[in-house]
Image (cartoon, rainbow, N blue to C red; front, side, top):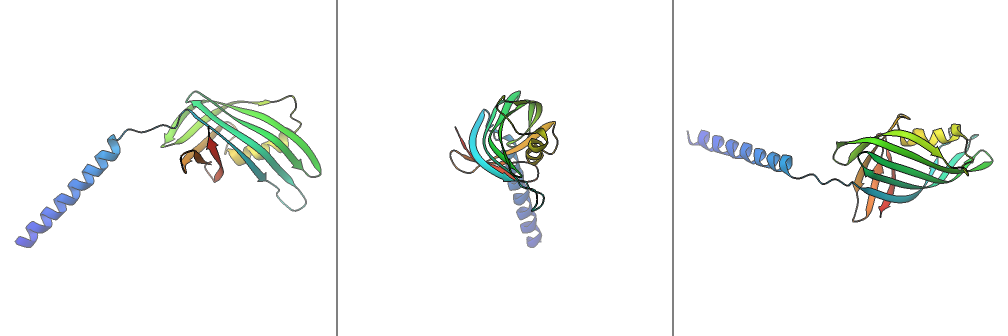
Length: 165
């Protein structure tokens, strides 16, 4: 009889502790990272085979102003085969929402090509496919690494780390 009472008491305490921790996690306030601005330089080597060379060397400025607006600036150079072009585009975002803790999904409203951009759309679309799963939206995870460094990830892979400013 004493064993059964000890087991019942232990089980009851374990369930009570589990409920307390679940309640604390459920009711603790969620801290949003918005507004979020970060800057980095990245290199994307997107060649499919040895005969085709596609290399992007770009600075990336990611800005989530709020859930209704944001953008990703891409500036740099692109080497496609033996041709070097300039990339200067802004991916304008809207209609965002937080999917999970610090995972944001925004609709791509438009992509603005600067007058000095000389990169063909077919080449740019290779980079866009690396950043997004679908050319109509972008979904990014924002993971804080230290005080001002963040790791930015897409649904399939981490894309870059950047410094918040």
